[in-house]
Each structure stands twice: as structure tokens, then as C-alpha cells.
Image (cartoon, rainbow, N blue to C red; front, side):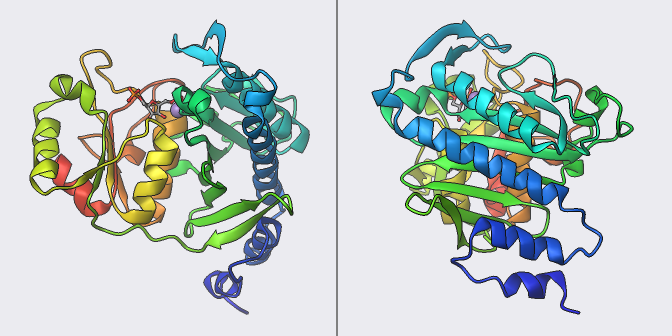
Length: 331
Ligand code: AHG
Ligand code: MN
Ligand code: MN
């Protein structure tokens, strides 16, 4: 019988996401198909959010909502819409018993207590770019629940640690819309074909360059960064690296993964623990980074090895090409 890798090699660029998922599942004879269905639910939410984003300027859903989320950040109308769309798609799908969202303080019980999975998500990443037509994204992280099936999910299902993710990925709403995900065995990217309404395999088995010459950091905060980060930024300049920072983690990460580069969000005076959220920003992108051959570090060790304490905790992050991440953390 063909091994999984052989089977996946047999899937050519140009197949639909559905077919790709079917192929991948067929390599596991005992798979029940629930994870496959969950990935389809996420893709559906992505298509719906993509539609809302594309017509946002026409139907008065740009701009602030006049509310704050649990982190005390202003919510944009599209943050709330994306949150609702994701929750609805995951509830309807039935495979997920609980959801953790950037936009909600506590976990959301879907009512599907038989569901084997929990999902942590940033429904819309890069909010400040919504109104100005710059790339934004959605990020997701999937765990198999550890609480007994048919009972309620609990905090322990979400605080398993980054290495326990069974799948993670993101949707980027950019010059094209792409879904990028990994179930632990390679990273694949699917470009949305609007005319077909389908995600099509376009970036097969993505491998990130081990080196690169792009650095992405909000240099406006330079003076409140730790010394080793300041030193690294000076090194990047002395090597004439290209500075590229759009302020959407998904967009900056995606570019650097394909081209080779590093994204840095260190601790600052204002955010001593960093700004980005561990469970639904850092862990899933660290998973994708490692599965594509890159690295993700918090200055002490791999992001995936951080022991999580709470739903919305933050972490500094240095993520991207392996050599560059090594350079910044080894000083
Ligand atoms: P979100 O829109 O989900 O709150 O995330 C915003 C994050 C991230 O996407 C981005 O890289 C970073 O905030 C930008 O922060 P600064 O404006 O401080 O550079
Ligand atoms: Mn975000
Ligand atoms: Mn967000």
C-alpha cells in the first residue's frame, strides 16, 4: 500500500481543497473523517469572511464598532462579523465542542458535546488594516479534546501546549485569498478561485528558506525593545536587509515564509509580555513555521514549548527562517 507521502505526492497542484483532504484522509484507514470535515468548515467560514471583506466598503461594515474586546482593544465591525461567522460554521459542522476566540473572554460551548475537537482562533488578524485595503487574515489552531466525550469541554482542552496541536493554519485575505494549513505532515497552500468558489492547491509542501534578507518589526518601538533585539535590528541594517512590516501578522508571516525572513514582536515597555496572543496567534503560526522548516522562539525557547497558563496570555515572538531566528536569540 502506498505511504501517506507517496499518496500526497500523487495529488497534483490544481486539485481542490476537498480532493486534497480526501486524499490525505485515505492514508489513515481508521480516520473517521471528522478532522477532514472540520477543515472544510473552516474553509467555508473563510469563504464567507472573504465575501464580507470584499464588499465591506459597499455595505457599511468598515470602521470601529464602538466596543472593546477582552484585551481592551477597539473592535472593528469586521472583527465581530468574522467571529460570528467562524462560530456559526464550527457549531453547524458538529465536530467541535468548544471554541476560544480573541473576541470573547471565555470559551464558547458549541452544544456539540460529542465533538472530539476544540479550536482556538483569531477570527480577524490585522484589524488596523481593514479600512485601508491591506492584507488581513484569520488564524486557527486545533486540538483533540482531553476531557471525556459527551461532557462539557473545559480550560484543560485549550491549555494542552503548542506541541499538542493536531492542525493549525490561517487564511490570508490579500491580493488573492489563500488557505494555508498543516496537519503535522507538511504545509500546503490553497488559493481561492472566486469563479469556482473553491480553494485550489497552489503551494504544495511549502518549505521556507533557511535564510533570508527581510526583517519585519515595528521599528517605531525600537527604544523600548530589549537590547538583544536592538542589536539584531542594527545587524539587519548593516547587512542592508529589506524592512517589510504591514502590521498584519498573517501577512508579514506569509510573505516571510515564502521568501525567507523574520518577524519580530518583542516585549515592550507597554507590553512587557509582548503583544501577540499565545494560543491563537503564536502557537498556530509557530506550528506552521516549524512544519515548513522554520523556527519560532520567545527569546528563551521554542514557542511551542511554552507552558500555557491562561486563554489570552501573550508572548514575545521571533519567527521565520531558521538561521535568522537563531541569530536574534543567540545575540
Ligand atoms: P489583531 O488585529 O488580531 O488584534 O492583531 C494585530 C496584531 C498583528 O496582526 C500585528 O502584527 C500587530 O498586532 C501589529 O501591532 P503594532 O501596531 O503594535 O505594530
Ligand atoms: Mn491578531
Ligand atoms: Mn484579531
